Image 1 (cartoon, rainbow, N blue to C red):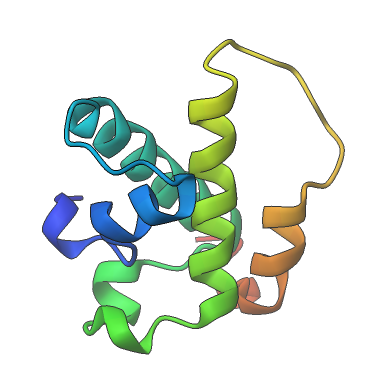
Image 2: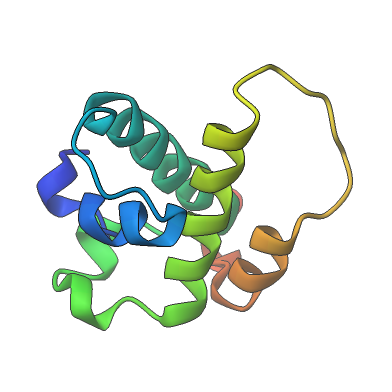
Amino acid sequence: MDIDKSPVTIEEFKRHLRIYTDEMDSELTLMLLAAVEKIEMFTLVSFEDDYEDRDKVPFLLKAAILLTAGRLVENPTDVTDRRISASQNLAEPYKRWDRVNE
């Protein structure tokens, strides 16, 4: 996915993290796109196909992306955790169960 098609803009993500400079934009973009992909994998939603307009993406999904991306920035090390996260709880209502076996 291209950052221009992300349901959350880099500006929204930086405001979420309270970052007001452009010094980390490339790293933040990587974390944001990884978070979008993670939420897509969890929900089986394709933000490019299912939500052509980023303004129509539900706030719960945007919040799930922000939480996931923020966690990647806060703790850039690899962790194994099988507990349900807050971001998964936010995204759960939008899970596309009809796509599970595709």
